[in-house]
Image (cartoon, rainbow, N blue to C red):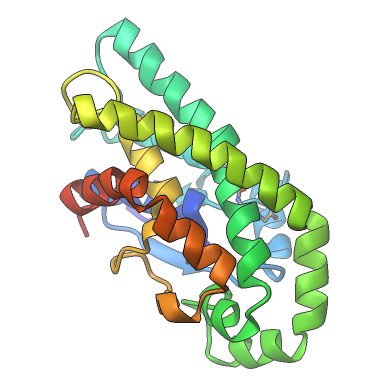
Length: 247
Ligand SMILES: N[C@@H](CCC(=O)N[C@@H](CS)C(=O)NCC(=O)O)C(=O)O
């Protein structure tokens, strides 16, 4: 039985899939691609869009973190991540959809806007898990990398500011819930919590996440300042990750 996960080390949607696989104790082989060079490989696999993560289970190809969790739940039902109760299930899926649609893109836009201004920090993160020469390649082509990434994901000061607003709303709401109860839905850990923990991980930079996180002191002051200001709301997510992220 072969399970492969096509991914970027840095991708927080890939982290969702990695966490779900680890939660279920499924052995898998990560296939870590370099952003940019991934397009050909992923399109050949899916025949569709080029986004990661993509799961290959004995030739069964599933693209997208949420579809991957659905598939794992069906084929590897042990250690479930979806509540059995129909109402709780709907609630967990609704949280996952909202976090996927709002938190994921906002964290990415906000973080890259600042990190792309620090090539020495972001290049090792983008190339993590791939052959060492990719760092050199990305460094040499950095101005083009910056241009393409900003263009592709519509990253600029205005969108970063709008993303920050989205994050503040979500972080306040999540912190408020986690202050009153241990999980977003019902009384056990579910895909809703997993999605929150994985997508927000770049804000608390857990050591298990397979990229070389930059030292706080080297971040742009605007990024560092905001992270410090929102530490209290970020903390419950960091704790959730620490408690539930099995290696
Ligand atoms: N909704 C998708 C989003 C995946 C996504 O946005 N992946 C990004 C990396 S974080 C990606 O692959 N971008 C490059 C591309 O689309 O070609 C999921 O949950 O998997």
